[in-house]
Image: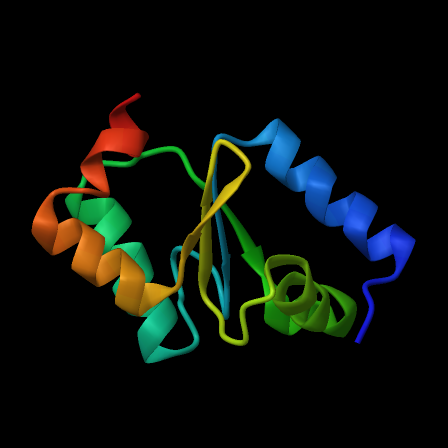
Length: 106
């Protein structure tokens, strides 16, 4: 499925204006799935106080659009400095190995 230009622009705008972005189900205070809760938990454990979360449950265009944008089938999706990092499994592996801390501190 191709990403419509409006949705692409909206996603790119969010990524350009926020250093750390988590596309997730729910929000930071109330994640709506276990994987999103795990992703938020990792960011909180790393002391990332400022990250922008996008609740994909509020917008079906964004929900599908972010999957197409990253060519990644699942949510949540973490972006740091506009770069796609991965979903909760990759975040967990990177957190456990110490790799996730590096781009967050840079």
